[in-house]
Length: 590
Image (cartoon, rainbow, N blue to C red):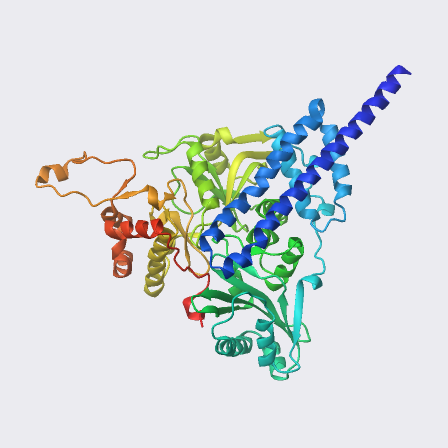
């Protein structure tokens, strides 16, 4: 009798603790979302006032909100749970209670991820079973929902030109357009021409004044621009997505460009740019809508694009598991193409557009950094304005893989180079720490497989990438071509971050002259070199293996070999100058 009463008491206590845990995590989620939204709500005002430094500060601040609130909740939960903190049964019960609490919540998927994050923060390096997480089961995966409340429509009954003008004038700003009639006329003709080339059904119905223009009620803000997202739709369902770029100039607002079709929108939502600020308390529904406009984009890419990077990781894990499960059994993880890194072991698998990067246990000479310093570099990139030139990364801890999918060769490499980061448990290989990046063609390989016209174009973009990073106060460090990749758009993006740093931390110098020829030939330096000294004249060694590539580069970007160029960039940064960097081609601008 006494034992039964004790068990009942214990069960009651466990229920009470589990309920408190669930409520605490839910309160933390609501607090996180409110802070995230409050920062986002200021995006339009910052755009209208042209407070572009505040735009960057707000972006960095918003990135801190999630981790900060997870930490706050974790500390509260430690007090609440006390002895039950590491009791699996209590957490399983808390998960079930929490699941019921958010069952009908507008943002249930993101709420699930917040619980996962809190649980992971508490359990840290202990064995985490997916039974305690909202991850793989079908019931945790969101089905697309109606986005009717997020969009408005303008009928074409009164003519396409009137509809386009209504589309623009329906947008509410504190700042007037400087040349509204002029800009709208260009937009009208550009959309018409785009429909003619890309979607005949839409074009035909435009001419018949049939169908409608649909647009998202929330504007998308990023850096110095605002974007109006929508699509032209024919009655039979054929449609042409578009994104209209709006800038705030000295003279007032102006329409700067329009991107048309899923491919062009994809460039705007690319993986090398900072995140949009979108005024919505229904982000998951917006992802559903964006998925309609860009059906080839994965959900995790779209969650990432609007700033929900932690939930994007949950979505990526599902994508990774599904992709692997559905791929042929002979598809194995192998070393990624390109020159092996001195700091990272990089691998991938056929059919996946991503690579996995793990910090090596021991770095190859002459690299002298520590693991902690490399992690700091990647965190620096996460906080930086990536200006379309730095690949975004997802950082995972204890990421599980199917052990049978690893080639014997790769497995041996991993054991010898990243052994301290590997845990092998039954049929799983678990990486304690790993970065996930978009797969690209390394620039040093790309230049060997393209014709001269393409080579000239990509060398121009290579130099442009370096200059745009400099304008954003970023110095890549190791600028060898093997550390840059080329996207499917032919755009050059930097992806090796172990030596990246703020441009203003560098001391750019000319190599001192000497009258002594023997000193120049000496293997030792004949002058003092500080740790942050950089000698741009020596950058030419990056092209030592390809004279044609060097000539194309030198024709456009010879100033990159001058210390004075870099010093002038530093001065611009100190003066607070923020250069204009457009996420669309110059030829698309009005």
